[in-house]
Length: 316
Image 1 (cartoon, rainbow, N blue to C red):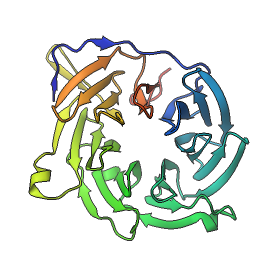
Image 2 (image 1 turned 135 degrees about the horizontal axis):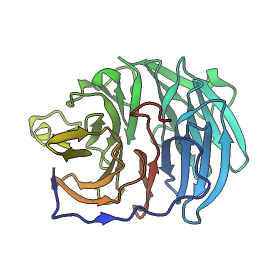
Image 3 (image 1 turned 180 degrees about the vertical axis):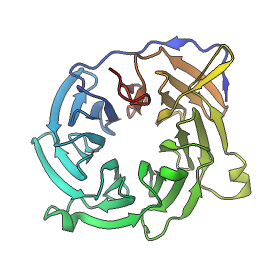
Image 4 (image 1 turned 60 degrees about the vertical axis):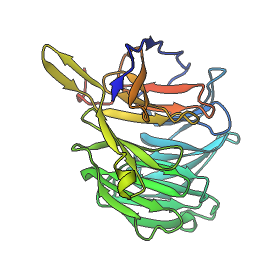
């Protein structure tokens, strides 16, 4: 991946008022508006109007919140370190426990195609839930699917689900038949996976690692399709002949152009043209690691979570 001729640093944007009090685990724009959902280690899930820079609502959980996603414009789901999956309705300030895992819930996604909530946990399972089953957690659970290791990242496109786990495993499912993965593969990157995100056009996914690298993968197993896959180095620094390599924590695809942004522990956000294998530009350096990224539905806004991700342990 090459850099376009000396891409200029772009400003770092405006800061949201009333941010979380601890590290941000994820943020997501709504598919319907510029509402922004933010989960945090401070035990909260917050809903913002990004245009007006206003905090619209907040739920406080018993423990850290590791992920969040929208259901509709004023409701969503959360993944808790207390092993619970919750449905949050901001318009009525009401929350329900959708179900539980046997370990912290690391990831949550809502599939509009299947009408199901998909969760991944450090208990080495993926679970599918029907949020309409309001009679209790037993009624909402659609299925439990064993994974080879702890789930670190999930991504959906159409009926396809990509599950990235510890041990560099990647399982690819069709949501219409979850009994077996369509593909079971190992990451083409040598080091631990941080993030997986599907291409908006549904042809494959990008996967990032702790070792300053991203791979571009394709679902089609034909030789011609697989010949297009590649990996590139990013979020690295070279000083006095010594390389410093940073984890790539976040990937977000532009919904219209198919370009994508990456965020790393170096505090930088880079925007890439994956087809022409070029870096388009880089935002001004943020004060801390980039924990999460999300484009708005029209691609006009990019939300950036800059918060320490404990890559160097506790800091005094």
